[in-house]
Length: 528
Image (tube, rainbow, N blue to C red; front, side):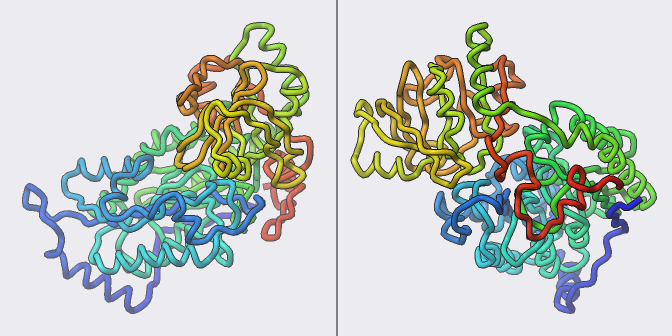
């Protein structure tokens, strides 16, 4: 059996300065703030640096200015007020009553989100360097919490999250525990746990449990800081790679994979089992599936759990890695049938369109005469430029070609003849517009990729989502949060692309430079 495997209790060798720093930490307990009971508090540094990077997406590589375009980085206590993973960690840590939190300056997010390509090395060094300067000024600390993603890609840095953990390790020394939370789409291997003491990964997609994983990370970190837990880890990498549309945890076999991890955690006190399903749109050497296990000083158990979960993933690989979805013409025809049968609203999910400007589904809806369509949303910054430059106001005619500008995979621009009904700020963008056209249809224009996950997100201005029969969404799975798993939309169609382009199931059409797809199932690998 060939299986990437790493195990062992975490042991590190730091620089002389780092070792001296750990001695100073031990001798400087008087610097810790007292709790209400008079005991010494554990000081924990908190930082967030998260990006799901589509290295195959077109456009310039984002730098510092792209990471600060939406808003300046969060500073100090602002970091502690963030939601999701950080929110869960902070709430749980504060509930203990003996944890003092130190927020390190953290960037809000890159403009364009997961439609952006390789991050510049300068940007990574800038933000991590700023965190480390603040960390060193705040020493001593007893622990570090990092809110990461796992699929960040940075030029010249093959494993950004592991590199971040390494730099933090050098700063705090070998004995201060470092724990992180991750998105299940992360590309991680054994390197992260070489420098850190724990990783907590969402087990649900959509990610209902990000807050929960933050809470778990806080409880785990406190146990390690108190000396009540000895981190002992195992990593396995079953050679399976899948597109993210197949990673929905609401259906088997992914549901069963995550349940297997939860079952081990329920059966074995002190065991923590995480599964990275991978993010294939990042051309990085550790792309693909990874199992991380932590146990309390029990190496044999950690290895046994990691082997079991990895082997189970391999066992269900055929069902996991294959699917077929209708092309735009068939999907729209099926939607017309659903409308005739009263099975509305219907969702058409352009799962593969990461830039968000593809027009294939829009054109089919127009050609087949489908009315009452809410298209949320189409990326088209040039169209927004014209609206603002011409100072078009609600009620003014709108006659423009939209979409289809990132290359052949996006299709051709589509002419829209309608009326501007809304313009303003939305979803963190300073310019968003809505255009009414045809019979009761509305097209929302955004300057960068926007993933809509709930009907409530498109309830603004004159737009009432309940008025539409069809929603076109640029999403793979997250839309199920508000449209499917709530029962809101009785008809769901995942729409495929009319070509072998990035974002589709057809990963073998991508020009990987750092990955050999034949090392993975279903693109060549036949044995684990």
